[in-house]
Length: 75
Image 1 (cartoon, one colour):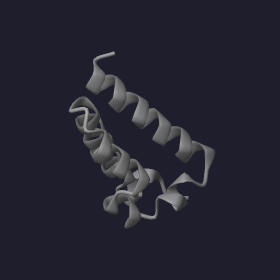
Image 2: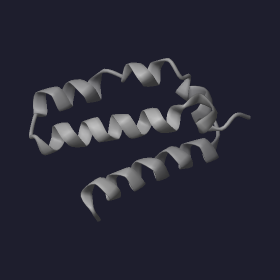
Image 3: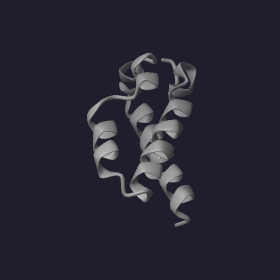
């Protein structure tokens, strides 16, 4: 099975997290909400469902999101 990195999903997730944090910090709720409702184009083209089929893939995504959140919020 391919890893999430094989799809470039890792980098796309980082970009999405950064954008959402930026909008959140600017208190731009309207655009933040739009981002959360509509999938990011970079993620659409990368077949993330295939990367997420295994528990390991899902754990990697959650670890990545947690890491990015902590880094950006200096937790």
